Image (cartoon, rainbow, N blue to C red; front, side, top):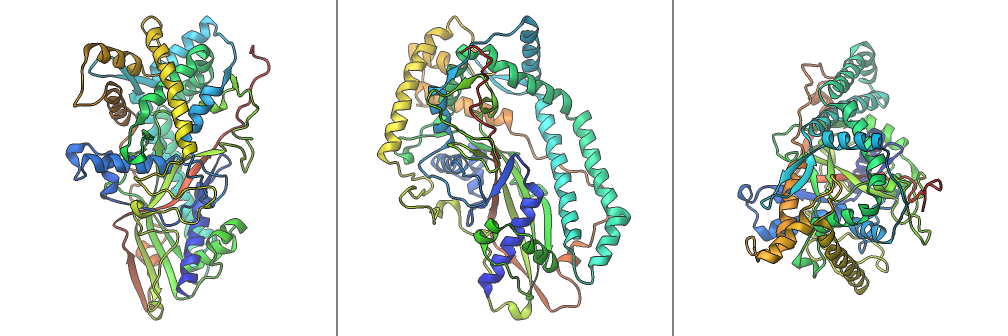
Length: 538
């Protein structure tokens, strides 16, 4: 009985998250049994501000990077290929791609330069070389975008609560919604959007981004591949626990989102709402969680959640939408459909995480232990990715990634290709400037240190450049968590009343996580890729 109850709660919560978060170009999949401890989440902190050792920080960075860069299939079930990572597929595509011949007009050159200047600032490293990061305007854009998305989530959450309300409170909820609450939340969304436009440079940033995405690749087609490979090279971090195979810089934003004092959105599901959501569960989700019948002993579930962006300084999704390149063997990364099919139909864009979970049950139901499949007490370090096809996937134990001969051989081949390309770039970079949106640290800094014999804290020349690059990108790309200014809006129903309706013999249980649970990973679908333009010169 307890397992049936738990499955029903997880299914209802998964349906609600899908209704709030999914769009045509993105979907959710559910890595059941995955969580991060608060200690683990300090891997992004400055070494002086964490209790983790340097090796622990490196291990946790590697774990996080590998998890977030598994290549997902387009569907709710978490069945990744543990031998493939997004960075390897991207690097192979760059090596194999054929680029068109293209030029820009003088006017297009001017507009591109102005757009790049508006979108980027430069951080200068110890050698005097610059690393491009977000401008202040772009950071403001993402801060106000985050506030607008949070206001929209609050509106959708309460609307769904009203839509699925049943029982004695249903009529009162609908009356409150019609009389004032819907208007209040819509006004909050509209104000958040106005602030995004006026204070967050929404139109200016999006116009400049569109210009850069369409013009930059065309201007630098002859050098785009090598510049992009250079960015990948700088983002790779050696990992001794990976048996010689490194990982690529990956972190989350806002960087302080897991500080316990930062407020998150609270979501509450009553028994009536859960039953209504379960009735609307799509078949693939019902098959994933089971539990299509709830239990009257469970009254409510409440938790705080947040949608946390995954940032990769080396990943440029606009490349996949460009029509200036193709693959000679006809490989299809994505067919651009819903659901998407291909070698690389999607990538993880963000993660929905939960904390402060409470479950309300009738006292007579307490004899059954309640463990929710969608919530996890299992730290990442113990996750074995159970259930993956044995013949296709090797189990991924964080910090100790098994590497088969095929993976090592492929990585070695790519590394040799990159080493030859880096040598050629080092000579060319002396006289030919790199495109402005790509870093110039690796070829010049490594060459300078190799000549002078300089060393930074015992690191190799390339490792020192990679360390500076990762630190600059983290500081320059991740925002701090903005606060939604809700004012003093009356709540739809008092939160305590929704969680524990009066007059019933109920007990509220806190689910101890000692960290956060990953409810779902939000995956962004790729457009049709490659989709070469036959009108270009090849």
